[in-house]
View 1 (cartoon, rainbow, N blue to C red):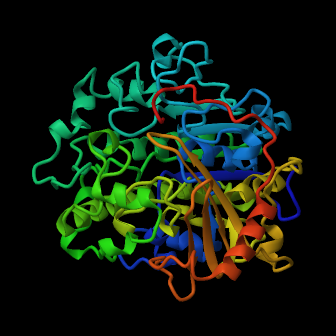
View 2: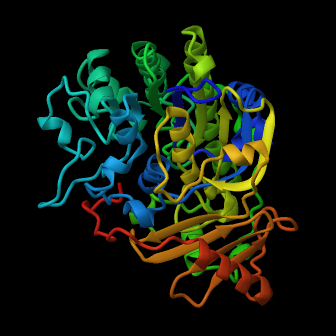
Length: 506
């Protein structure tokens, strides 16, 4: 089953909500990612990897299916895939072709909220673990073996058991009942924890942390499948908020040393009005989605940035353990290693935090590093590519046919045989309010069309890399050209845009 380069297996490693510029290989000077930078030196770095959707569940389905939300139907969080889409996932196709498939960590391939009556409840739904056999390990979404964390951010994921799925049960078995759950909570935070919103230093020992557990279980998954071609997906829940790194990682970065983004509330004048509203704060109902980034102090924002990079550093260490084990098992010569994130994080840019219908590069641009036998070491690809391109790329290594997708394999781009001129992102946001944003990213510009609104966004990436000045109104010719390209690149809807199955946006 091995391809011409000798590859027959794939190890996909993802973070949740990690910006590209947290890596040294993408320009960070904080030193949080020595392992990933080493992987980049031995592989290919995609400088402009763009998500198909800036929220977890839709983006993960684009990674797995090679389809934009218009093709897989998961157009937002809390929207479950239709049954017809699951067999089209790379995991399902690989399993049918004889590849061993396994998933470890935060899947978020179905809703994690409370499912409304009359809708199917998948394994990740809140309450699902209560009636599930503790010995259950799949199949799930095409993976024959799964070990899952339910969402993965406090409180969901930590339990108390049987909530939290596999990790929640494991955590309870290594400390008993509510004890470790309480240690992970902000009520038991370490002394000296920051006071910034959604930031604390977790009292949960590193050995029991989800990041460590994902690494441990992934290593076991690789060891168990070493004699067969495999597709293993390791999915870390961090550095998604809340920002709660454990010791010793919580002491890695000082807030006083953190670079702050430009902070000018006037920047949002002339931009879509929801941005200024979120920057000022929408009240408690929105605090879990986006704290008032324009109102918090420089100190609080620096504490958020320090905790965020501490979580990145912990993940980097865990990736080193996984890749080290892969190579020690003698699997490196036949395994492609792919590292990316489902979406980025605004992290105070433009007075905004977390994510939302705000299509700035901090949210859309993610790390994409690939080490694969036969691919050049130390190479970089400047063209914009989409995470929708990953499934057909990984399928080619696994010997799986995957031509009926929106994405295109990246082999030709890496080899210099073809160029890419644009990547498309779409977010039909309906959590608390409606804002439908369609974005096209080219090497020179980023255009966001707010469907049905009298406003939009256009940023010139060369002269304004921070995307501070909206040129929507004063560059009509370029705007028309990019809108035409956007229309040409957006695929048609081929599945129904169904209603969410949960009242919660998870």
